[in-house]
Length: 404
Image (cartoon, rainbow, N blue to C red; front, side, top):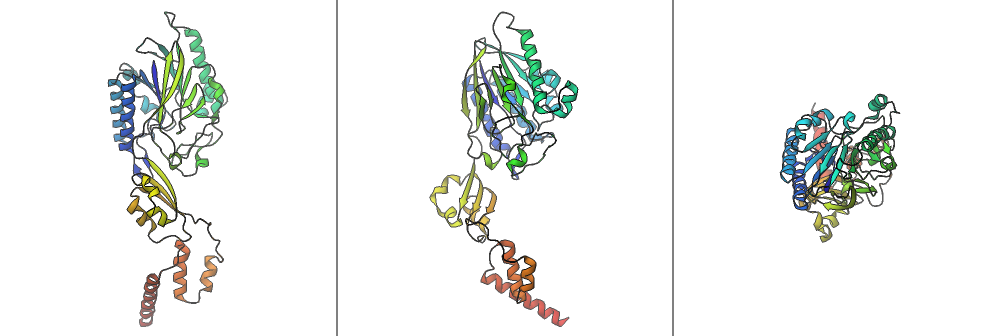
């Protein structure tokens, strides 16, 4: 049996104001090709299917088309809700979809009810879907501390109880125990693309500071999953191995510039004899890729070393001492998909000798005052042409005042 572990599709997401739907469509087409070409028996989608609780219509349509394509390629789907999803909306129609091989787990009270999968070679697996668990709500309901680790321990305890009661399959064949979960595992490497799930904090927007989004309060030790055959994690966007049997697939696309060096894809999980015998990477280089560039503007515009970035979404940092004139406009002549522009002088920003209020008092003339304002705001002195325009405007203002 071959299982394909994926997560964090975030359908409907935008990237610095740019829609990602076509890139998401391209990478999901590659996922479906993997299902078809590798003979995948089931796709495990570990949460954050959508980017928000109320996804746009085109994102819902893309999910519908992708699930139909996976089914047509011969695989079943096990899908859970993440912290970005609305569990109720994602779970709508779940019992009906199960009849066609799309199994949705969004209700915490059903997490110990496995989906029993049989591969094309007769292998069997019990797949348990743990949706994102909100500790503040479930801790009280389950009689445990309202924190991520105790709540997840209770969820896994219920799964172990079911496995023990179930034993081997009815005809004596062993069952591989596979679990989907959406959480921050202790020791995992996050990025600024993930929303914080630390207790007491719920961010609902994109941010550029990774530390603002990825905390430590919500981290769950990997030891919680000891003894299970495979744990398919979602939430962190970088593909990574927490233990041989506990892994993040990462997101199929980069959703922050902090992910630009990551290879995106999933894991192919091979099950034989009721155990996981091999896990291999599968890459999906779909959609427009990212680039992070830095240097003097002349080098960025002229050096052949940056040609690889010309068709990518770009974050660029210009390191000239003064902010170059029309810097973003000039950069877009070579890199038309610049989304983030920064000016950070290579030698560091010089501390201002005077506050703006002091400079205002000390300006010897109105012209010095206005050109000083230009320099203060944009960190580049006014050009001769700009100085002339300001002088003309000041003269016109004085003449008008004299005529009043």
